[in-house]
Length: 354
Image 1 (spheres, rainbow, N blue to C red):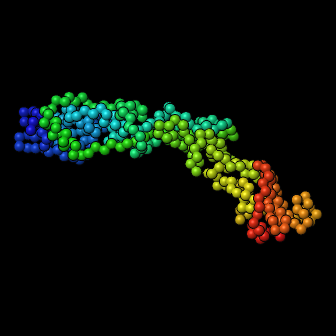
Image 2 (cartoon, rainbow, N blue to C red; image 1 turned 45 degrees about the vertical axis):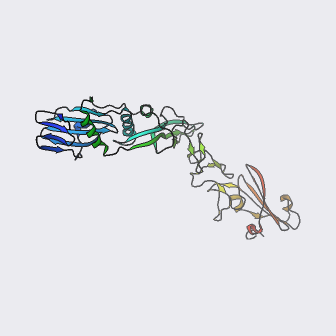
Image 3 (cartoon, helix red, strand yellow; image 1 turned 90 degrees about the vertical axis):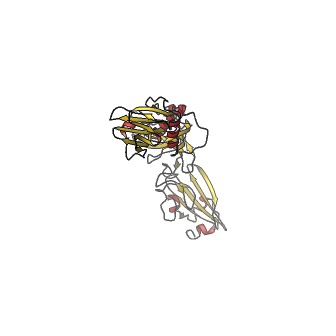
């Protein structure tokens, strides 16, 4: 087996540092090896280290890009190439920038910070925007060229100390076999964006909104609870920004899914009423809560003939009339959306109206 000769008595072979009969075998590093990671970007993995007297040596790699580093008595190290892989250097630069030191990443899709269109809030203006990468691991799709991907994600150019391929072939091969005993993991990722914005509304209130931009897409969306995407948002009465507002037919103020008093259907008339305008424990709106029987002389005004009965209730913007004509029960509701007449089952009304 060939050796790298360091001085008259010391050399490096597959086993480690050798001086006469003394061998300082390759070992996993006990801690950081500061001199061995200088001048690298990304920082390499130090797979093995050996020390013998004033000599130190390391086997360093970024994926399949591997080098032997040798230092004497604290001097600057000399580096010798074992294998070259510009692609893995780019993968390492991506992984270090987006995942963690020592990670290598292939990229399938990228949305850059300068290439997306955010959401829009009519009548308001954006006063702050924070954009950070959003990493999706194990995506579908073909992988980009590593150098192209590194540029697309904005990772800095990779670099390593100058290292000629000047070792004997058999020594290079044996050191590479040693390195390959520890596998290299490359993770597939796609890179989208996570966006946080502050918008100043017409009344001066500042509202926050957070949304994602999918990898490879350029339009950002806010999702409704049912998953419907929206690129245009509106403020509700609590200053939440939402894609869809639900308007209360009583107070005529909008709520959204995030509001505690969000609009729901009245338990009787089925009209849209916010939590503040549902005023009974059983879920009736303000108009249904005050339904009162119409006197005998006023029944005609409510479309009820002799033998029938009617109950009527009103809130500021809603009117509800319940009618009984023979065995038929109906409910009529007037609100901002027009007039609706619905049949009622007797069990819905008999406990309340006689």
